[in-house]
Amino acid sequence: MTLYHFGNCLALVYAPYHMAYKFSGISEYASFSKCVYAGVLYIFTQLCKMLVLATFFPDSDSQMNGEYDVFLELLKATVDFADLFGMYFALNSVPGKAHAKILTTAIGWASAEVAVSRSVSLWVGARGAEFDWRHVRSCAEANVALLQHAASAALVWLCARRDLPRALAPPVLALAALTPYRALLEDAAAALLALAAWPLLALRALHAAALALVTLAFYAIMAQQSSV
Image 1 (cartoon, rainbow, N blue to C red):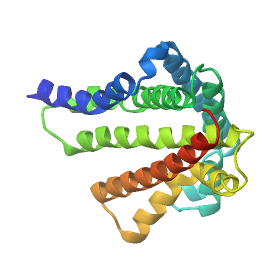
Image 2: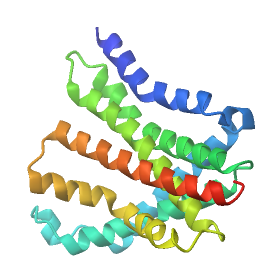
Image 3: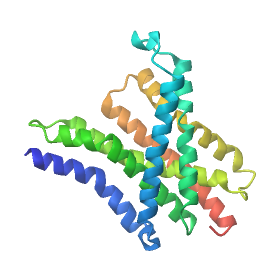
Image 4: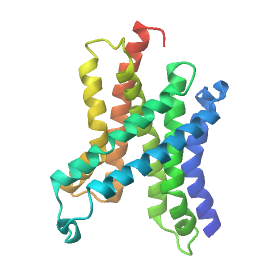
């Protein structure tokens, strides 16, 4: 039973990633190595972020006492701009059309995040003697993260375009600038609405879907005006 639960969790996490890679068409570009490269960039970026956080944002007395410092949390979230720079380098390393660049970067980035942040907890927790919905929720969050990273990669690609229409520039730049604060805004909304774990997951999924649809609309406009 424990192995069955563990297998279901693995399928829930990795099956959507495999399907996204297999059926999106990027496998035709022989981009598996580029996915791995994007994953390596993710790990390097997280190490740099950890170094910055440990150097400039050590644990303060207010954190030790459990107090919430809004300004400090905003500064910490600002460090996540490093993710956008990492995605930019990953996008530039992928040859081919725009959709291949975006999807390859998103899948590689999100896969590395899953491997680093969730694989150990699934191996240790999902193989336990008792079933726990917490692991199923964690797997669902990994799928939401894939959608979020795809939208973020598309926004970075749009921001890097020199032929971006002037009408699209303000909303694209605004969405890209708000990307590092996404988790902070979601947690603030959850605290304001007193959401439990599953409603919070639903909120994150709706947020990711809305951001992805808006970004897709911007990408479609861009694709109509130029050959990408």
